[in-house]
Image 1 (tube, rainbow, N blue to C red):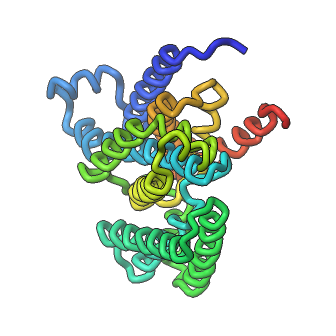
Image 2: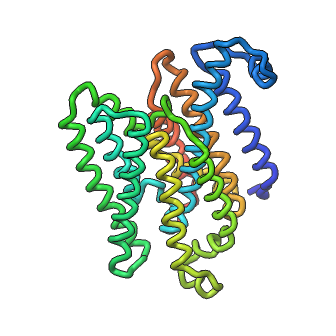
Image 3: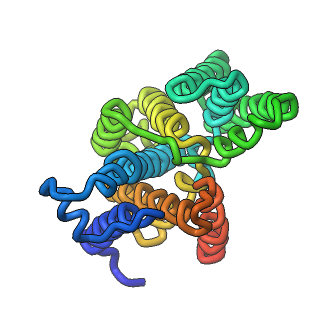
Length: 326
């Protein structure tokens, strides 16, 4: 195997991120060129192109990148917390709680901030339920936490099916789009960006401890790591990152599962490298997926979660096939 070259991988990740954003801004029903982007930076661009960039493509591209980066980082943290490479940001039922809140808004004919707000509240309720059940017995074992998440997810799933089966047909399509992930109306503000930056900085600060924690609680404790405090921080950090991603774009799958795996295969197993690479790769992945979602069948738009699944499933199968057997 060739020696891992972090600077080369970082350069590739940065170039891929820049290229994905550039293609996203130029792709769509209204034709834009690279010269238009240059003209936009100096303020000399026709009104139509300016409106398309400022009101549609720039906000959507930024939302896709922030959401993808948040999901990838949440996936890294959740995999350390559960010491399970198959863990993803939704494994503890956060997406289910957010979905119930969002679907309730759609059923009531509410949108905009109501949709994001109720999804945010639903996700926080799910975090509280999982934390309350898992911590009540005083056992923060990986198995106990994972089983709690599975049970809570099943409960939210039952409520989602009930809401879908009792909703008016006019609302069902909007519900399904949200459940599959949709960036058509997504926007991010300073709060989401601030949470992502803060979470990334704190995760990088704890990267050495994360490297030790993956070897087990006893090893980490023997090396001076405050295991319970770190695991609690991972739980709430991954949960908050997942919450901002879900409230922005709905339930977009496979980003937090596939991206960390692919990076580990390249040799980025040290969390001091895995964390920044996951942020770049996760954002790039979702920007590319969203570009495909709105251009493949234009003018019809697909849910971005459909594209991430179509890319993620074969990618994950390839990862499993390439992994060395034990």
